[in-house]
Each structure stands twice: as structure tokens, then as C-alpha cells.
Image (cartoon, rainbow, N blue to C red; front, side, top):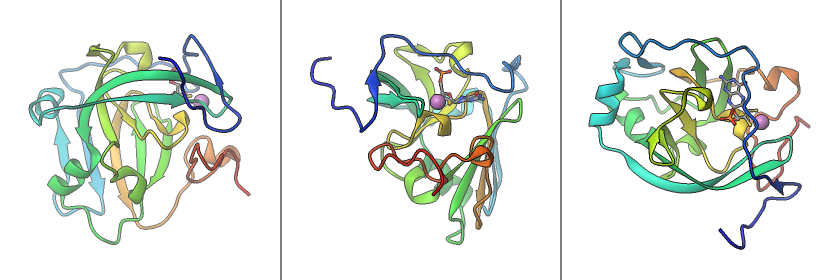
Length: 187
Ligand SMILES: Nc1nc2c(c(=O)[nH]1)N[C@H]1C(S)=C(S)[C@@H](COP(=O)(O)O)O[C@H]1N2
Ligand SMILES: [Mo]
């Protein structure tokens, strides 16, 4: 893709750096579920098949790691987070969603970022199921935020009223992490 517009302070990279700061979990797809919980009327536990059956939207977006590398034009297919919030009956009181991975990594995201039209739980990447090292079976893709909010090996979305640090936020990284406002660190 020619003419990629980079957010401030980013450099285009040809390759992904694969991160797994708490290790790479083994995933058993038969027992894996995506839990939608917290401030919701109907908590959900969705299987991979049930998510696929919701119908997938496709989008092509650039991916930005806060350490400075960006990958252009990644194709993702997934379920809109706002549709999952609707299905679960998320409360108006919810201001944040904590995304949790199987091995314990976590990241909070403001509800208004997660409810955007192009914020999805991705199940497919570049035309195939997300490769294991990239977070199979699911990871949130919120294009306006840095990549550390894209929790690989996702297993739970927890709607919360109050902000709580995730893994990197507890180490000084920003609560929201908007790439265009260059929100890398807490102020
Ligand atoms: N479970 C988990 N998810 C994670 C991370 C991690 O260490 N563990 N690293 C994050 C960071 S900092 C980035 S930039 C992206 C990198 O995605 P990739 O490993 O598919 O390249 O994953 C994010 N999601
Ligand atoms: Mo990152």
C-alpha cells in the first residue's frame, strides 16, 4: 500500500514483532469460550462457532505498536463489539471494558472506543483464522488505539464502571492509548 499515513512517532515495519509477555497459552477450541460479563443483563459464554455464526464484518486497518512500529493494511474479520454489548445487554453505567486473555494478560478500553463501528472482536486475519502466535482464536481490534490493547488469546470482556489498570497500564502506559493523540504513557 502506497502512502500510508503514519501516526506521530511511528515507523513503518515490514514484519510483526510477536509479543507474549506472560507466555503463549495452549488453546483447546472445544472448551474455549468468549465470556461477556460484568455490568451486563445477560452474561454470555460464546463458542467459536457461535461467534462465526453471528456473521463477520471485514476491515483493513493499520496496526500500531507503542514501541514505534506500524504494519499497514492488515485485513481483519470479526464481530462488532457493539453487537456483543447489545446481545449481553451492557449497562449504561459501564464506562470501561477489560479485555482478558487466557494466560492472564489484560487491557482496559473506554466503552466509547469499543463501541465504534470499526471496533471488532477479530476471528480472522489476512483471510484465514488468526494464526496461533497472533492470538487464535480471537483478539479485539480497536484501530484508533495502540496494539497493546489488542489482547491476544482473548477469553473475557468485562464491562466495568470504574477504570482499573491492565498489564501495561500498571507499568505506566496510558489509560486510553489513542495513536493519533500519541497517548503512550500516563501523564
Ligand atoms: N496476550 C497478549 N496479548 C498481547 C500482548 C501480549 O504480550 N500478550 N502484547 C500486545 C502488544 S504490546 C502488541 S503490539 C500486540 C502485538 O501483536 P502480535 O504479537 O500479533 O504481533 O499484541 C498485544 N497483545
Ligand atoms: Mo506493543
